[in-house]
View 1 (spheres, one colour):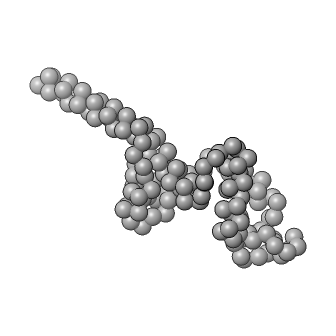
View 2 (cartoon, helix red, strand yellow; view 1 turned 30 degrees about the vertical axis):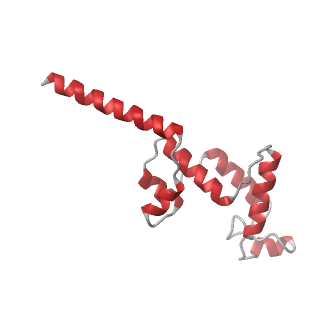
View 3 (tube, helix red, strand yellow; view 1 turned 135 degrees about the vertical axis):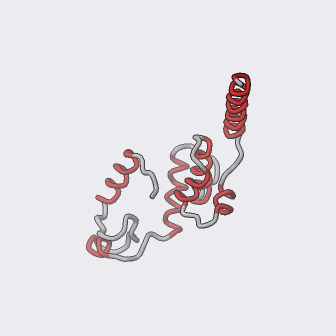
Length: 132
């Protein structure tokens, strides 16, 4: 199960209202309204990639943004927020943890988090040891 923020759910509902396909959230948008509402064909990858590029340009992002780079960023941000690697694996739908590990990037935030957690652990161990 993938966690879905309420704001994302609302945005997806608004998107669905534009086509009302009973089977697909992102159907292929070709033909008349009835065809779009009943098609079993998904949006083409190229259409999605073009939509992402247009969204990045409209936000003033000069970098080349791809579907894959969004997944990598999402996974890295989850890691920075302290989400367990196995949970990230589940969210991304990976069978093997090694696939997930390729998506995770070491950043200054993850390094600082690791240092803080190690320091916290060592402090707790020191306090525990001193009580003995």
